[in-house]
Length: 96
Image (cartoon, rainbow, N blue to C red; front, top):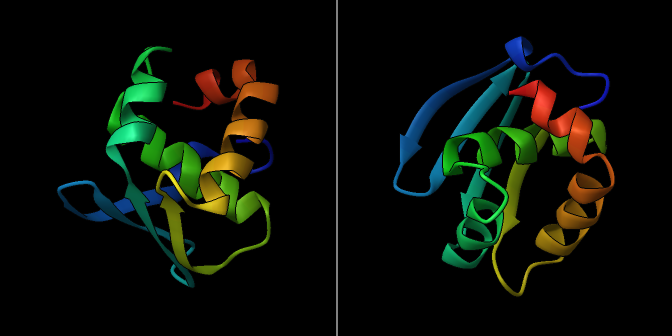
């Protein structure tokens, strides 16, 4: 969202609500969305594909270069991502 251009993150695979993104050929992140996260962000007109991309950008911004971002209801990632997203909502909207 902040220092990472949206065009640098590429979706390479999607199966249901699991997305795999790569960044600069060296970083690979898997984002898993829960129904709760999808419903929450749909209220703010954020589609699931955009939500997954925002979550991948957030993870890269946080210093993760690989692994999984779990936006499940009981996940620490969901709470941390929500805090970040709603604090930087205007920037996140422009990223997509």
